Image (cartoon, rainbow, N blue to C red; front, side):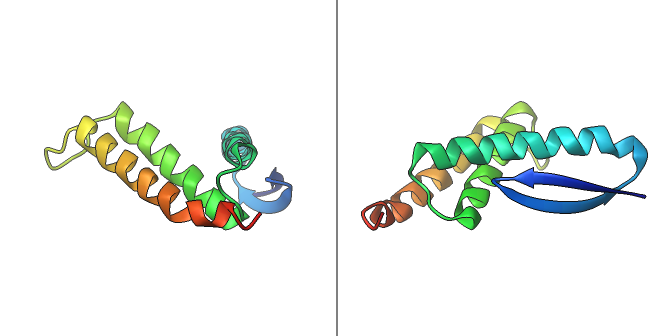
Length: 100
C-alpha cells in the first residue's frame, strides 16, 4: 500500500491505495475538488459538508443518467428523482444565503 495526499476544497486528506489505483484515485480527487469548487463559487451553498453532499448528489445524478438502474427503473426516472432532490436541497438552503 502507498500513502497518498490529496487536496479537496483546500483541505489535505491522506489516503492509502495500491500502486495500480494511485492514478485513478488522484484523478478522482481532482474531479471531486473541481466539482466542489464549482459549487462553492456558485455561492448557493455554504459549508464544506453541504458542498460535499451537493457534489455527491450531482455525481450520483450523472452516474445514474449514464446507465440503466436495476429493478426495472429507467435512468430517466432516476434522473428526475435526483433533480427533485436537488431542488428540495436548494430550497432548504435558500434561507441560509441571507445569513452571508
